[in-house]
Length: 182
Image (cartoon, one colour):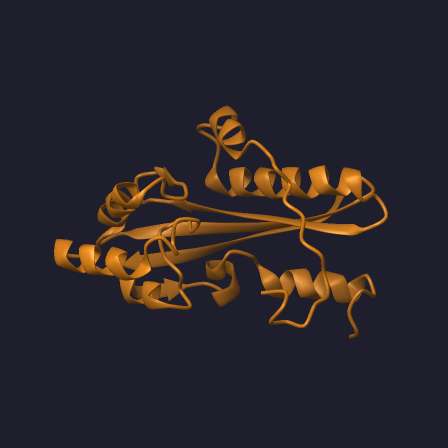
């Protein structure tokens, strides 16, 4: 997204224990978990690069029953996620945190509502045949910019939030900071 927006950056993996954070925050609102993970990622990299603005982001899908979906572990797990999402309305929380000198200086969390149409087994099998393993790293088992759009009957919320980061607020903050021309 930053490439497409023309924002210069360098990427560095944060290498945080996402599963440990999620386990420690079990029962907390998904919004707070996405925010905490984004902050943890930003802070970890910011400690190594204290002079830089560091962006961390994360997304969480919460099913209507409160179950949180993570990235699928394998193709069978992806099929189970799609079955669980089929015919329901779910929330996708995308968070972004910017850190500087090892502390958070800005954050934003947005929600998108995903209305998934009823998916038959034949569709799920064909979809995974086409999209696996590309969706292995995708919470919710979809790439909205590709065939994953076929999972939905309606989406409420910002397109970039669905892609995985609230990009427009990030860009606005970078303009306020003078990092991008306004």
